[in-house]
Image (cartoon, rainbow, N blue to C red; front, side):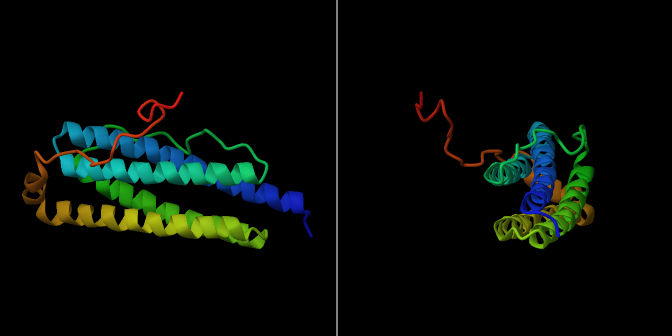
Length: 176
């Protein structure tokens, strides 16, 4: 039987692996957001930015849980960002990434459960649900591009990339 500290370290390890995957996703999706906006697919760019913001919340939640367990949150990306992707590659790539993430997070959830951390299990369950929503979106857009091609893309060309989010942040809120 492993000690409480050994069990805790196993949980911290998988939470940090998940955090590094989220950090990579943030960078990947923001890179794609900028590229989609530059290609004048504003609606797709806006949704990509919102998904990146979801990934930021996930990275923060994993970091907070790691700190609660006495660990140090990682700042490393799980892998390099794929840059310069064409529109027909982006959504196929992202659907695959989200599908892989769901699989890996389910394995991490088992590690947390096996090591007696129900709080981390609940956190992963919530995040897996959100990653599934991301997968569903990416998969649907991939199918639209594959089935409708330029007809689908021409409908989106020239749309606004505004997310409608109110600017928030340290500087904007007047905190000093």
